[in-house]
Amino acid sequence: MQEQIPGIVAIASNFNDDNNHQTHRVSHKYVTAVAESAGAVPVLFPAIGEQGDVETLLANIDGVLLTGGASNIEPHHYDDTPPTHDESLRDPMRDGVVLRLVRQAVDMGVPLFGICRGIQEMNVAFGGSLHQHLHEVPDRFDHRRLREKPAAEQFAPRQRITLTPGGRLQALAEGAETVMVNTLHGQGIDQLGQGLVVEAVADDGTIEAVHVAGASTFAMGVQWHAEWRVPEHDLYAALFAAFGRAVGARAAARNGRGGMDRVA
Image (cartoon, rainbow, N blue to C red; front, top):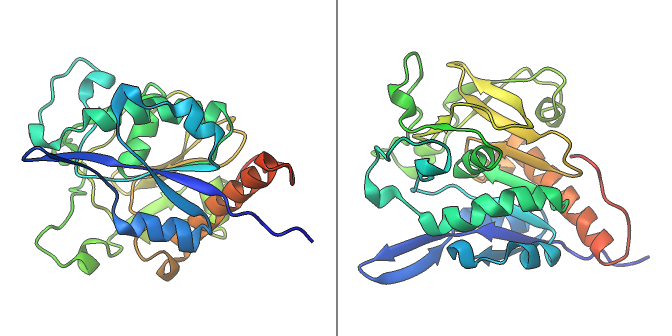
């Protein structure tokens, strides 16, 4: 019996320039979620803008995780509206590489999992748009982080999402109609990108999960932080397990040891 080769997952980094001290950053919880809950080897892909060679990256890895972050996607990527948020919440270096990475990953059959900013990047990459200030949209909730609270309270489940009947997310949730998840985002999907299918919505109508129609493997995004204490939440664990299976299948195929799973 051949030993299973762990897949390699590239985790998208955020670019920070603090007083000219430039760094590429990823929260530790994403790294542990990939290693422990997806069973893969995490590597960090720097936010290097247009210099990022995404095709070479994707040819040598088995999955991509798009993380959350404090920054927002520059609105010129989806409409002509000037940014209305604090300029410190920009990350053009990440925009420059990740928006290209999304489409290429799907085209090359590399499993793709977007979280928070990640689902927004998926939506924009497929031609969709975002609400820059979701809490200012009529009849929408305030989904923003409760920054005055301890982390455990910030990331605790506090909103209900309704899963699309018969959808892939509902299958992972073992048929549940609704699930409680966390919510820590200031922006959200406005116009849905072409080829994206809604998998869940919040009670205020905000799109909370999507998958890419026609993708040959796992290609899903969620608006909540599924990387938070993954083993403690059944749906978070199921998502990372499904992502991990797709990553493992690609690793086996890339190493000549098996075929690819078509969907999660």
